Image (cartoon, rainbow, N blue to C red; front, top):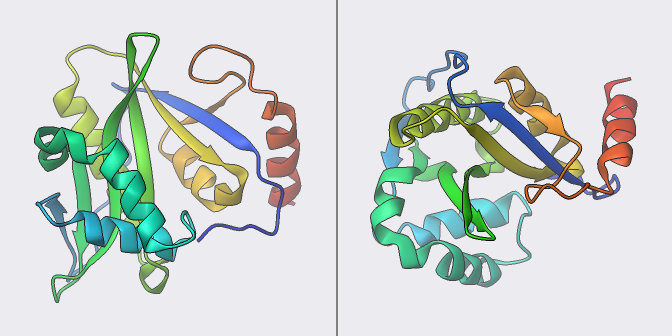
Length: 190
């Protein structure tokens, strides 16, 4: 869940593709499933439940613009975690972002529904998504991740998996929020 009690600041992180991946498995009763047609509803519900969007309609619009045109990629790159009853309760995507004709691997939209947080689902999703990147990428490169200070708990998880904070934005320009990000994260660790 986002912590909107602190200032919002943009955060960019990266890790090398070939770094070893911390072992993490799903708890008993949970399983992974790739995107299937119709899962945009589950994605929208999960992302809205963690406060990434104001409502499900806004989340659905984002999905339609960002993901829906790439159905062939979604079925190989968007993961869900299902509970024992088949309900999708968490998601993450091994995606790409294009800037000035250059494609960047992007660890994208990790979210675990509030009732399922603290069970180790996020950790297992991070590990599995990083494995996806290793399977779909043909050369060693950096994997990028965009987040915000509101996700400071997730930032700590990403760091455990080898992601490091970047002073720059993905396009190479200076991230003006970087000094405040460092100060805020240090303050939160105290």
